[in-house]
Length: 417
Image 1: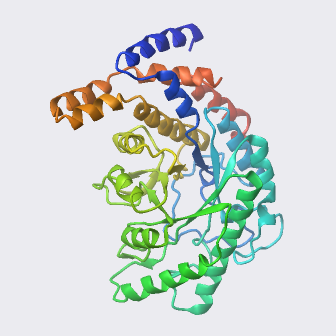
Image 2: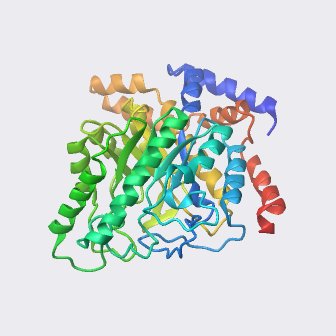
Image 3: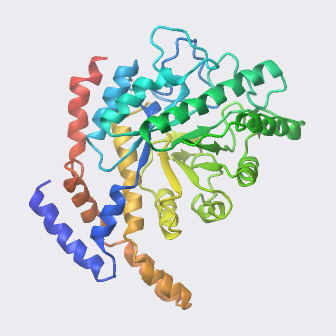
């Protein structure tokens, strides 16, 4: 797309938004700082680099067999580095515990240490990224149906130790990068069919969490991720939304909202203002569920747009952490990355461009016709011209131009794997 036409369209859009009291230059400054935590597992379909026999499963399933999957740590890093050339902004990288730099050594999950992630810290610093982290409870011989909620003390202690070590790794990452590392805890614990000891398993999970969080850290933040159900755990999930909401509010932990982990009729956007009153911060995992938690690539749909608007309307950009969480193996994996990151940024751009002061004034005055009318008109405002300029300003591909770059990368790199 030609620079002159982008700049001309932007000038017209800027004037249009100015007439509604929106300072577009300030909006672009804010968007530049909206950090998205990019998930490493889209590159290799949640395989990781363990030398164990990764069993998969545990409520997780990547579908598709598109060629070019990253096979080892260097290929994941190469792919993510390419993605960074196609997206604007200041971002983060989210690692699962199974993505350590283990070399040829067998390191079980209750043995992982900060040293296994030192090369990630150094690589991220070189690329201008900050790191976030996740413990990994699935895909292991000791996963089974229950991990932290397991009545078997031997298995439960294995996963408690793994999670403690994951927190210690997160602390080391946060200290290295001089910015808190967000450590997400999600366990698949549950049951495929009718369960009669629901209270017992949740009681055990609470006790496990208390033991895990007994050590306090300064350079990491804990967050807890709920789920409606998982594959093979359709009837009962120990770590439900209600469980983690109660625990998070009580212990002042961050609650993670994964957009694929709720009933499809639920509004995740509506949960933002409720949680912010009772929990210190929120972690988002942005995905696209179709019929179930299918982890489709995030696109610019109503769900993501409304979520971004609610965060901006609540003045909560400094209290909500934004991460992606999908793994689509049916299409070009780098393309999936770029589509999802850009879609999320577009949603926040639209949110930041809302004439919020006027809308708030209409609402306060009971001018509901005016409020609804302006909300409708904002849908047709030239936000896309602002988006194109944002890309141009950051020296990345404008519009659909990134498609050709990904095709070229596939031809030269991923097709040869």
